[in-house]
Image (cartoon, rainbow, N blue to C red):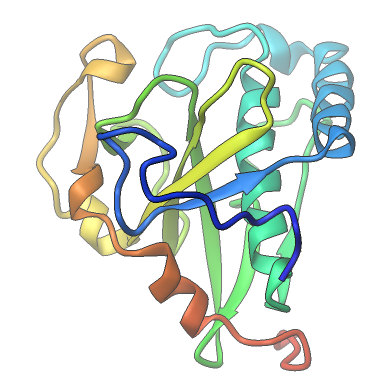
Length: 202
């Protein structure tokens, strides 16, 4: 197992951590790569557009990529086949960031990253639920080194929740699942196929 996927004390995230979460330490290289991608997208018109929530956050792409890099480092630490796609061309409409194989089936996976303590995995009602699996990530420290992969859910589980005001989106409407209703990250790990089981190209 990679030394960047750490076996921290269960209380390392405080009393609000979730038993099924996974802590991941990002490297300086990870953080520099996310910053470089942010700089690339800063040069496009995409940087001036609000997110699907209608809220503008400076550096939001960097935050999202840090969560993605944490998932990528975690998945590859135990040899899972995992393809990561990054778009910095400023064009909307790209498919979810990850393709993984789970129990022989290719799945699209999307990581949702928060810098504040998330109570739920949430998606704005205007955002496409075009991934098969959604993972909630939380950046714990200001240095952007420690990321908690909180848990995950299937698309149908998230889509079946009622449209309600989402506090993280300034009470704009969306789907959400409580962090305590999310599936254990270790369960996702056990189902991911090893890297010697390639993707179907059909």
